[in-house]
Structure formats: structure tokens, C-alpha cells
Image (cartoon, rainbow, N blue to C red; front, side, top):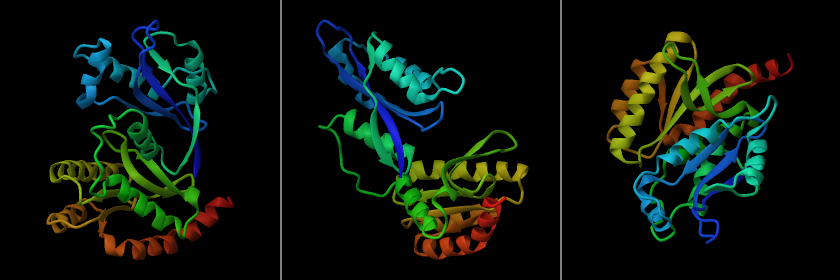
Length: 267
């Protein structure tokens, strides 16, 4: 578990009336000048109309961009920026005091806090399927059974020929030894297909820069597209692992990489 700090963003159009609406959450990444941000989704923008906002909520997108990479002095952190914003911001957007939370993944934590503090509780629907975040947690837990926790990293960025590419997980100790993408076949087919096509392109791009980097795509759930996806990823130099074989695959990766990680940790 990692100790994170977070703040809630409040929209206060008229300080005299003291009316406000929670419009976002910000999770500071420990020791870094970056943060994970979620702001009110466009599907719930009508809630702001009661406070005088018409149709344009693009100011929330600008706010999210500013808080994702806040301006901080050299050596400063996102948490420092949020503390300063809490005491200094007096406009229509206010930042709450920092609060603490323990979690394994900053993206999952930010989404959970959004649901808790920002999403309309009247329209909140229980999740009836396992999403990509659930797939990532499943794979991370299997890998951490045999590898040091710090060796299994989330949200790794790998250089590509055309652009940096993000993967759900990575294994390494200063040097990336294995990149991993995760998917849930229980998600919407349209969304799933778009994400998997983008992942195939990312793998192809990364292998143009680092041909020898092992890349694995791990899936949970079942679907008619699994066989086609397996062939597509083989074509770009990746291996696809299905849910029943995750633990076996994780043990194999551990057996292969644990000696390398142990050696590099003593260098």
C-alpha cells in the first residue's frame, strides 16, 4: 500500500450564499510534482446549472490540466501545490484540506474518490462487470506473490518510435524488463475493441525502439474475440495470456526475472 494525499475540488459561485458543489478530486503522487485528477463528467454537467453555469464546463478540463502538472518550485511536489491552493484560492474553485488514503494504485484510488465525493449518488449504478482496472489488480496481485512489490510497477511509460506508450504494468528495477497490458472481456465490445487496437499499435511502435522487450497481454473474462486477439498480438510480437493461466504465467515470469532483479538490486 502507498500513502497518498488527496483534495476535493468545490465550485462556489457566490461566497455570500455558501452554496457549493463538489466538481473534482485530486490525488497527489507522493514525492512527485504530478497528480491524478478527475473532474465532473459532461453527463452530469446539468448539476452545475443550479449554480448558474450554463452549458460550457470546459473550465473544468483546463483546471484538470493545471492540477495534473501544477506549477511548483524546484523540488516541490503536487501535495505542496494543493496545500497552497487550499489556503490561497478564493475564487469560484476552492480546494479542500489534504486528506490521507492508502491504496495500491493512484488511478483506481482517484476513481473511487470520484464516485465517493463527486458522482451523483442518485444515478450511481453498481458495476455489474469486471473492468480493466480489475484486470490490472488481478495481474498485479499474481505477480507480487513471487516478486518484490517495488518491482511490479503500475502505469509504466515505454519509449516508442513515434511517441511514448503507456502500459498497465511493468516489471523492472531501474530498467524495464517486461511490459504488460491488461484487458477485461466483460467490458463493452466497442470500447474493448478500440483499446485493444490501440494496444497493438503501441506494441508495434515500442518494438521499433526496443525489439527485445517482452510484452504480454493478459485478459480476464471470456469473449468471442479472444482467439482473434491472440493472433493479432502474436503478429506484433506479444503473447496473450487468458485468465485461467494467469497464476501459472506469473510463476513463470517470477522464475525468469527474480534472479535478474536480485542481481541488479545489489549492483
